[in-house]
Image (cartoon, rainbow, N blue to C red):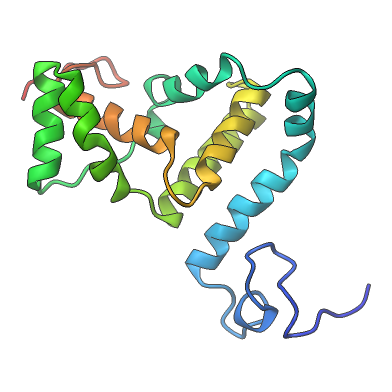
Length: 181
């Protein structure tokens, strides 16, 4: 195999030139490594994506993706201890069960968690759950495709919403505790 040139795109899939990524003396940045992991996870899922497309699309699997944080606590994000007005509005809406208020504020709150590092963390959990056969292959592939998006992620919103519901005392924690607010 020929040596990769420093000005060519890095073979890890990050999209950066090799001299700024894996061929750098200090290695790739954490952000580049996370982008690389997301790209590699999607690339490894291409056969399942092709099979899904051949079978007519994702139909009812999208709902399964959105329910993942409710079934797997490691997919729930960690909310900050200090609550700002938008997060407070989300927590209050969850506490009183106001679905419209939740829909109004969830995008703003979840955008703070829409970082490459958080998406890569969730993708690593999805890959592990797929390897353990805890979730269906198609659900895992759809979750990874959703996390690859740069603009928004429905799975990430579901993870933030589940964290807010737990903190507001609307659902039980994974250990079965109901937190009183």
